[in-house]
Length: 327
Length: 292
Image 1 (spheres, helix red, strand yellow):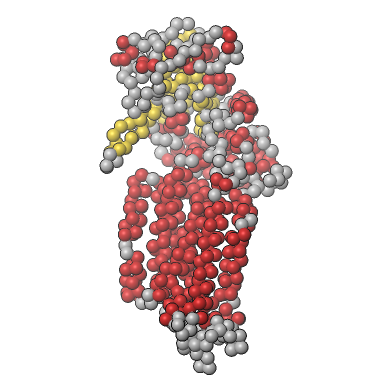
Image 2 (cartoon, one colour):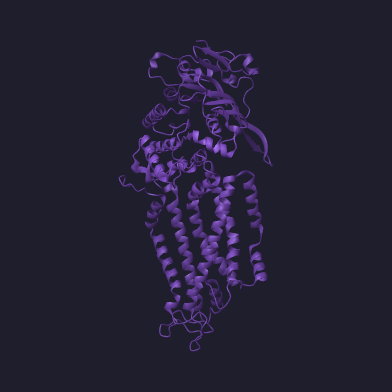
């Protein structure tokens, strides 16, 4: 078996909720609660879930843009949470991020060249002339002309800006890119262009992606492995084909049933979950999904389901449910 | 916007275009430039010196024949020359005190806002404490201990004005800290100092510039007020505030001694306010196409 690129163990990120006269920490928002997964080199992990389920927080915590409270993140065998500032800076060369909002992710006062070149400058890679050449290469790699380098972000459309953001993420030849909803702010036609660009780049460069999205169709298109998140936890994790054809967790099944079908007459029944997503400040007891679960039973209210791992022909799948669905 | 040129249209250039399309702002710029030119060229424009008295004409009204274009005061000093020299002091105090407050305020505010947490609390509570100091008392104390000195006025005014600047900048930095381009810089390994220098400060300059143009007239007024109290510049040097003070005493016998310095002072204040308004409109991102 190949060595994993990224191995996350029991990652926890809580946000304090302050209140009262003296800003006392009253409660914790459990944004990421005991999350574990592994990612192989060159693989794309799709992270899917409703808004507010902790997808983005998980992505940021992986890069230590938000410090996790506890857990371990092994990148090529080294725990990045134990690194000091200098080690972390060196490590950042291998892990980059693409953001959701292409209008907020580029500094309005810096030219495209300055933006894309900044990581190269910081890590002192090459001479100024080599950097300039590298920047031109990158901008052409993402499908823009080198002539745009001296322009400012406000002169570009959302899709073009997202390409610039991708070029910046690629500048240091990273091994892992966290893509935080990179297409959800774009028009549908531009979405597919940017998605295909990411897919092509991944094939050409062999970069691993953690692709965060709430769009199941997008996730299916781009991922090798999919992890479904609910209230800060990963409830199911499997290879894309098995997850989409035979979900084990009722939540996954409900999500999949909500995807609009190109053949509405095929008669697939849509599962409508009752109620809203509970507050992550005080998640329900036992299985956090039980108040909305169509298959919930008495046990689900009391005991929290543990991760179950199934091996099936070289593929592994994990799920946390007392009463998993059959095949 | 032309798409085929290779040169980018920086936000600055777009702001300039919008600035130049406003008549009030352009007029204010022109008038301001004239005032600055006049005060700079003062010695070339009149044979009189700032402290020379013309015994032939004491308290004479403005006249071209005598060479006293704005008339003379009660000891025969030329008001035209004194107004222009006074303008030098007023503008100098306005600009340098604003610069002092700009530099301290921007760094203090940007660091507090970006660092956040306990550092932010400590730095901003210090600002609050400084705010609580009675400003006039502070100035009078300085004057009493060190004697009247124009540099003391700079220090006193600058030391108080940076507090407002720091608060404004801190608020901006706080909102910018979690913008994605700052996170992208962090993910790229850029150090905190460079993030403040390269990403935070350039992006809050718009607000800062507007505030600067509104601070300059404020400082000029404060200096005038100090001079009015007799705490400002020392004779024979003068400032607009001091001249207005002198003129007010002679208002009934020689109104021109009040009118001309007051006119220049008011004109300058108007200009700065119009320029500030124009800049605020030009730099407001909401009005610009293509910006969210």
